[in-house]
Image (tube, rainbow, N blue to C red; front, side, top):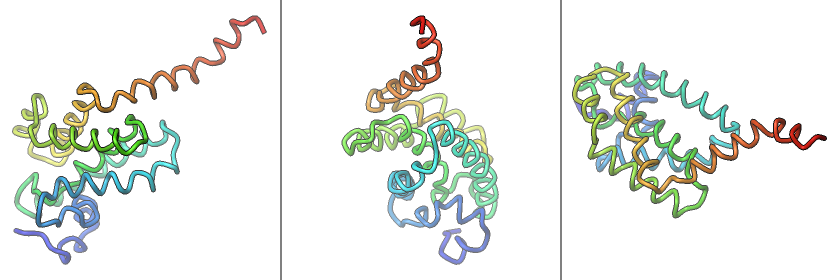
Length: 178
């Protein structure tokens, strides 16, 4: 079955799983979904602290597992190409730890698409063996971890360092003797 606009709006799960319509792209729907994530990130992220955004991503992952499962059953293919929520949520996570400049984010976009398409282990095993909504979401979440190791999102280490400094600021303050 080839999903269309009617299918997209036939159930809220289809609307979410198909990335609010980006998954209906006739060419490279996964790339279209990742691009939708990139374009929507600056509109969504300002409403959250970093930790709040991680909580949002957790909820989006859980909702996505349900939506991907239901949509996959309706389409007769567990990981149909039109299901792109599994690209959107992990790429939001990648963007969270990527420096907020165009070139860094472009590099993260390219690396994420490379690893999402090539699916090195263990993402490939998950993709091949977990044929349900959770598996659909999980393989791309695992693939999102590779760009951090590949280099273009090294800003994530700065995010962790900044968060750690903030978290332990009171300890440093107290050690001054003040």
